[in-house]
Length: 317
Image (cartoon, rainbow, N blue to C red; front, side, top):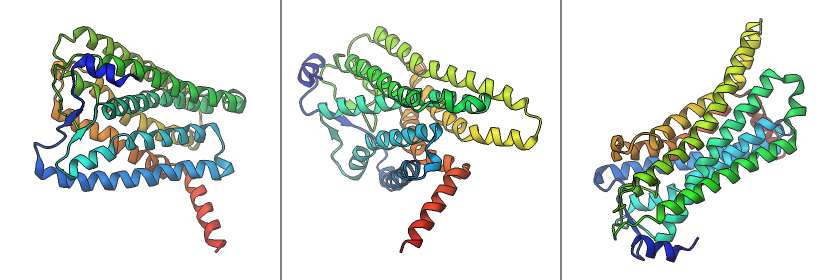
């Protein structure tokens, strides 16, 4: 990206932007610093554990855990793209971010968010095949296809992010540099524009619809097929097992899509910046932290793998 050209285009200074964050609530900043730091530590530990278990235990070398380890790595990166800067802002008087730093943060965080949208759709398809085509599961979900779908999720997510980031930072802001947010995000940045942005908003809205609603439609179709298949199972034990296979993923989907749709698909005139900050805290910090716990607490395979590795490390002493 040509940062200097974009700086000249939108009229921002070389000093970058001032992230107002929660500076209007100074009594809240210390509390948020402690809470965010604790959540970030748990996010690092939980997602690293999922990745390590998926790699170390041969029983978890399946498509489901391949995609789950991708999701955990994605959540690690997503939180890390936002939280360190937020902790610096909350702990001191310096709340600035350079122009290049803001561009990179927006590009990476948006790219990771878009990738997660697609990856959750891919994971729903994996659960559909596992429940509705169990005898053909290993044939359909071939390792090569899994790698291709995961790679496509990352590529499409970051390609969309590149387009939206360039469009955002080419907007003239006439020297305005105060972002009413705790990180560089499109809804907050659009408020700095000093021209009519209705056309840009329409373009970004349709891009958001594409990235959110198409994977969401795939998820709904997949779970529609799953529910029909489960209702055909005569034994209640079989139904519970099938629902248990999908329950964790459905919980994660609900948390992620609920907050993302609120942030990106509602009309700008209905968008409250204060509400937006707390919703953003939820999907940048809370959701990545609780995802590993959702999958481990409801998953016997992951808990079994954790016990096995812990016992092996204990016995080897």
